[in-house]
Amino acid sequence: MKCPQCQSSNLRNGYQNRKQRFECKDCDRLFRDSYEARGYHLQVKKNCLEMYLNGMEFRAIERVTCIHHASIMNWVKESAEELPEDEEDHPIVAELDELQTFIGRKALLNEQWIS
Image (cartoon, rainbow, N blue to C red; front, side, top):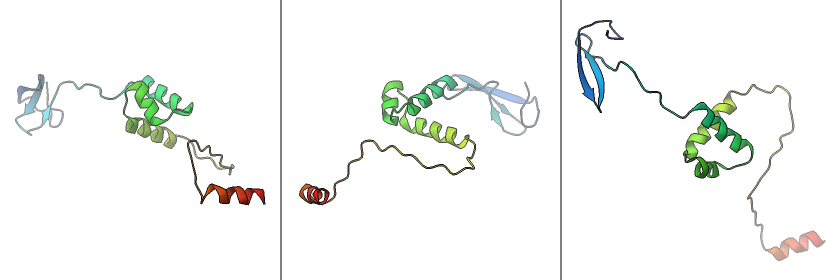
């Protein structure tokens, strides 16, 4: 085994968190011979994005999949950045769910609508 930084074979080995690691005596770099892949599987991300596109809210997806809603929001942002820019102007269509607006008293609103 050689150091990935200086290619020296002058190494000292030890363990950290029950995993073997090495230290180069020449450049003092710490490294392991293999690393674990971290993160969620690509299919899990796709399923969460499909749930979002089908109208589920972030916290609802979190309850179903046990994946934190901030992670899901980051995946949505990343996938939106990968979309190509649309050069044509299209009207923006927005769907507002769970939006309640109160203006003044109900009696005033009813009078305005009647007249």
